[in-house]
Length: 127
Image (cartoon, rainbow, N blue to C red):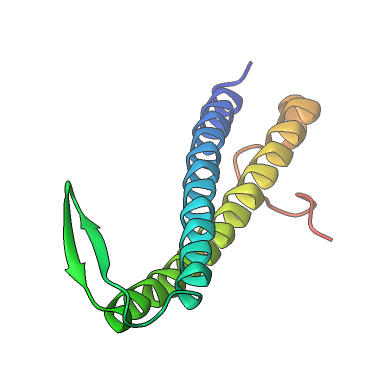
């Protein structure tokens, strides 16, 4: 196997690991987003004069309805943005993976005459 092909395989493995990490982060963000949305929905059914506490580390601290609602709303907004960013990152990594996989296939199928020296010269898979 040519050294260039071995390098591409290593890059593919790295991209696969990155894709897995991004997918895990996205799932964690989605879970936190769903939990926060559920809490926000539940908070809408609570009397505004009810005693409220929020967890800060290992301690519960008293808070008021408006602060609790605003904090949850901000958290939901932030998690929505984070989830969107992770989805875009996941798409970019998948595109890089697909492109690299195509290059590797061309390299292996083309053999010595395939011109693996250039980064996608003429006829390197364009539409």
